[in-house]
Length: 384
Image 1: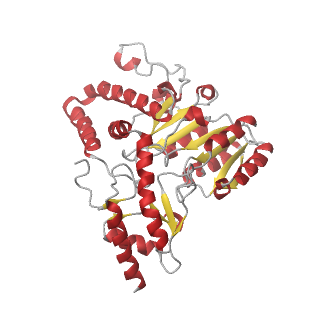
Image 2: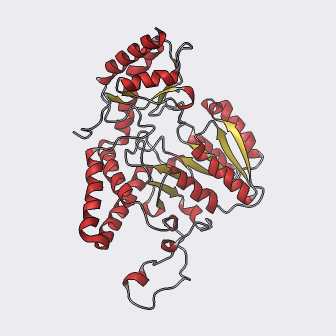
Image 3: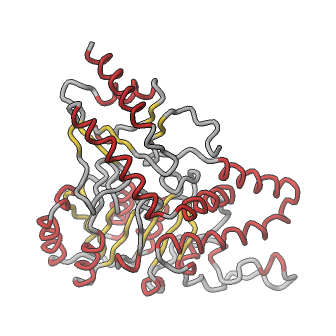
């Protein structure tokens, strides 16, 4: 069994935090045992492991390993770009109203630091081509960078990233993508999408642990980044003074031009060991197969919920994701409903007032009747 301690009969919270599998736990135990036995002697072994992981992450998003930096979270990936981008005073950043704050707050802070303007479009506008027309008009006014999530956290709307990036490129704007609600559950391809930066944490659909993630940077954009967040490990050959004898302690070594300069100090080895283990399972199954499985789960669940008075916010085919969100009937408090479901060991979340279901590859269609039974019991209690 991969999840022997999981209490839920249906864990549908992979869009929040995924439970670690036995493979993930085994990988973390191996790292701890290695350091317990060898201390610093284990460092090289796990440094090699992180290089393997870098290659896996690159393959996941259709990029190359040398363009991937290992970071602490999606938020850290956004902060890194926001603070190291070659801004000029008066540059405009385009964000989307309704996004998770991870992909808004760092740009607002950068605006205060560098004298930028942050402008907004509404996320829901991008459900239709009318939204792209609004995007065109905003880009025509001059935008330096567009920040968008590949999938919206509350509704599951899959954004038209490729179309956004194409329009941005025509106007000379760059594009940052928050991919934490995409990687591991829908196919991601940075080259096909045409984006410039992509960040993702590991604790949701990648099924790793909190405190680990990655940032991909398009090769052509790397030289322009300003290493404002550099640390001692950001230099070229940063370890020579520790392992190659006297005379190598210097402070003038160049900062690396690759995005790995953002790996500036001690790193979360356990988190990255966990991520490689979880990613190996995902890549063994294959993201296209996972995506199809999740849509099948949604197909089984959504009509039954609509019959019970819920209003589905599921997008049209081609714009769907791992998230199925619904508005509850008017007489039902969604927070109380989620609590009742939790008491019946059905784990869901309620972002921005929706009832959100986020199944993944471990979920089985046989769970759906149990979910509906729990839902019916909860609704009956709330309406009693």
